[in-house]
Image (cartoon, rainbow, N blue to C red):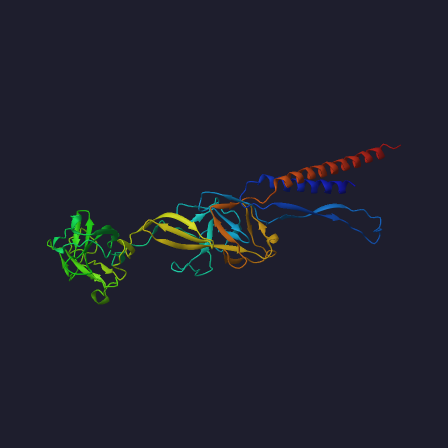
Length: 432
């Protein structure tokens, strides 16, 4: 009887410990509740009568974790991630050995001093390389995810696409009077930013003048503003010249408002920046601009820029990090570049109950769980990744408190049974 009571005490203590551990981790992100599972002890031999043999007590079979999902808590940190559905994040202690990794549902990540995504234990979040143009995964070989603080080498502007509607009823101007410093001598002006070979930026201004000497004709002139001020940028072989020597080009429109072919369908080219006297601070002086103006129209509608694009860029600095539903890491940089930097890797196993608990809300695969299966968010049986949210522990505090009371009652009952057994033995020893 004493062994039976002692096994009951041990089981009740394990139940109390398990429930207490659940309650202690109520606010642990990604924590999964545990449940103590027990079995009875029953043994017989050829010399015992099975009909009259009592049980021998209780034994602990397993402390099993329950992997159902916890609720979400929303944060303002874009690096906070949660998995909705099946799957775990993979983290590695050594970024040089990503093959040695563990699994977690705790998605509280941040950037370390080297701009790698890490958790509170300085373990590296693993992901995959992607094609920066298509966003497709290049290889399912996991590696630490890094967020470059800078992106892209400077690229000088060489091609500019411009689409504009020039109003058919615009005021007529005398091209012989054009002066870019006098707004009364032209109809409209616009500006955009361009870059040289070192990534230095300049303001490119465009002036539109409706030619009073030729029907359905507009003249365009360009200038570049550097550290010294605004300077004319002439068109190489241009056919529109002002009295000041500023050379532009003409745009002739058909009677249906469409643009007649310019320069044989080739881009309109400017003189070199060096020829224009632009202060480049040592950048490439042979830089020229080529304009594609095929999108221009002359309709009876107000002046409007319908399209503008230039192919230059300066070095960009990281301004924002985001994630899409596929777990792609999206970096936004100060040069206007939006880059897919990688994709968060996801892992699952065939039998979650067979995982080895490592602490820190982390697990590792075993022969009982099966090998790790790698994949990506929202594909196959893997759940989706949401950023700006964390998964809370999946315990039910009300149920845990009820279980705690029940385990306490079981402990008291087994203690009482042990006390009764001791008292009976004492009474037997006092028989004379």
